[in-house]
Amino acid sequence: MRIDSNSVIGIVGAGIMGRGIAQVAAKAGHEVILYDSWDGAVDNAMKINEKELSRLVEKGKMTQDAKEKTISLMKPTKNIEDLAPCSLIIEAIIENKDIKQEVFKQIEEICEDVVIASNTSSISISALANGMKRPDRVIGMHFFNPAPIMKLVEVISGLQSDKQLVEDVHALATAWGKKAVYVKSSPGFIVNRIARPFYAEALRVYEEGVSDFATIDEIVRAGGRFRMGPFELMDLIGNDTNYSVTESTFNSYYQDPRFKPSLTQQEFSQAGLLGRKSEAGFYNYEEGKLQGKDEVNKVTPSNNKISEIYVYGSLGVADELIPLFKKAEIKVIQVEGDGYIEFNEIKLFVANGKMASEISKELNEKNIAQIDFNIDYELSPSITIATSLLAQQHVAPNIAALFSQIGKETLIIKDSPGMIIARTIAMLINEASSTVTNGVCDEASADIAMENGVNYPIGPFKWADKMGIDKTLEILNNLEAFYKDTRYRADRGIIEKSIIEGKYYE
Picture 1 (cartoon, rainbow, N blue to C red):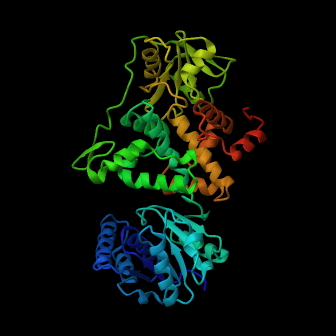
Picture 2 (cartoon, rainbow, N blue to C red):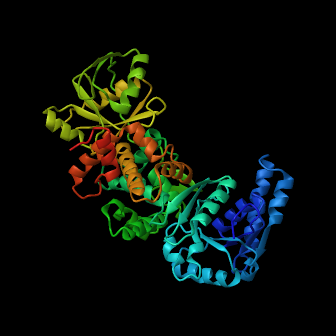
Picture 3 (cartoon, one colour):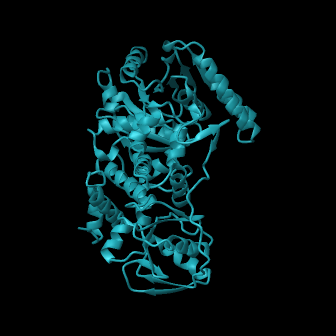
């Protein structure tokens, strides 16, 4: 049996994901059978779907006729045998392998030639297929919450999944208006694997006393143009949920240090400080409103007016600052050198994975500072700096004075290897590279997944193009040299690219 636009779609589980997927399929014109054994579950799901579709009508995003047709195509039931006409059944129940397999076996008894697609976010498709009559007809179809809005669908093949059926389901998801990507079954698939460093690096720099929650979040939002900072996002997801996913990924990869969970997040979870759902987490919430988000560490600029700066060599991506300085009528003198800005006996480097203090020691100079990466220096409202532990007190205010002349606030963190954006992005790129090296997906799919599954401003390989593969490798190598814990070891894909480009760092 082939899966196409005429297929009857079954949904097992009428929770938030199941009812959302049912809505997506019905909007696309499919007859949908929505099954759940719990009393009131399917009725409640239909009521919520009706309300959501009514809001679309009110906003002019859907006609009344389209709404009524969509509702009419969704058939709620408490009887699992009503799934018999389905060609494709999407399972969206509890994340428990044994329970899912029990349901799959019931489905196989009822439906002779059906494709079973699990919406699991973490369980191996190969493992779910094990013991089924037709393991070749078990695949993964991982939607993201809320399913009617989020574009990404990870179409996951297990070791025995039929290739043609996987292609059919990919085409079907695409026809539903989704960004479908092919994924080989592996822990975390694409998104939940690549996203781990976004949380892990923020937690690590916090635990090292580099900065506080609000400042780290603001740096990530302003410098990386992410919609939410990591602590704000963990509070939204739930610290217990996020910790559980990290712990599961860590164990699935045999305790690889890249995925090591955070003791801080464990402590918050055990204390019941789960985030928005408990009204307290990394932030406090009053009537659902986050408190303290704007309490960030800023530098007050000195009264000095900077009229001239020297730029030694290339600043890499931070070369975007040069036209901003010139526009502000700051004289920029460009000369050969190792990539830094100098003014008022201050040397300002771009983050490269070392501490500013390490650079101080190498140069035998005190007044050294670093700036963090930005995805777009012109649009960003702020620049983040860290000064050497040896730097004199006037250094930070003078740097703030320079950036104030181009309309930027200056945020400050304690000196730290890789600062915040540079290390986070380098690790996202590294994990994405590892995902591709392991054959889980290709580069284009990794970018599509991260942009559409978790709303990253750009995908990790687009970041690599912007940052430069040589700079990415330099940051990783310097972080690994500092921590010596193999967490920052560079993926062979990055090393291979750097060799091809002739820029491999020993």
